[in-house]
Amino acid sequence: MDEIRIGGTLIWYYYVCPREAWLMGHNIVPDQENDNVAVGRYIAENSYQREKKEIVVGGSKIDVIHSEDGQMVIGEVKKSSKYRQSARMQLAFYLSELKERGITARGELRFPKEKVREEVVLDAGTEAELDKAKREILRILYLETSPLPKKISFCKNCAYAEYCWC
Image (cartoon, rainbow, N blue to C red; front, side, top):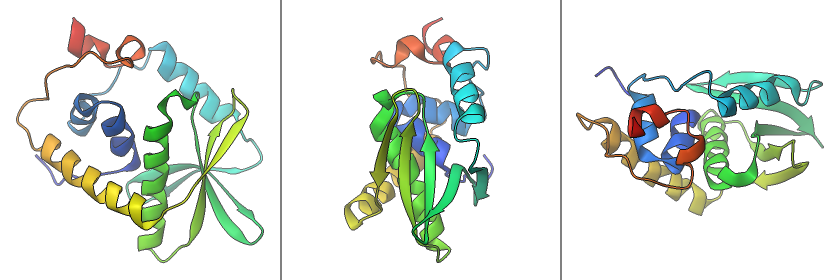
């Protein structure tokens, strides 16, 4: 296996399902025709038109960025707050990537369909949780085979369902 780089997307998948993280980490692409993938792509492309989009930092792609009261604000756009914890940790990872580069920013989760915004702050507790998650992701990715599928509430809409239940 090549050198493993953990990015925000792997953080997202890990918090939803470790098996998904393993699949993504091994370059197994989810079903791009899945309705949820298509809706997510549409929302990302058509929301927040006046802000800069898809800024790349390290191995991560930040959805939106703007300045507010002289402070950089980065945003992660999601179609639903159903995956709030995954989205929160993904955004915290982006804030951590910026911090490592000497850039201070504030995070904002955005759920345009729900018209909700939620602030995300990178504090000591969140940094500790991210470090623990990164270690666990590396452990999972170095497994020779993926973790066994485990039926969870997110399975019914998963773009990886065919890898688990067919």
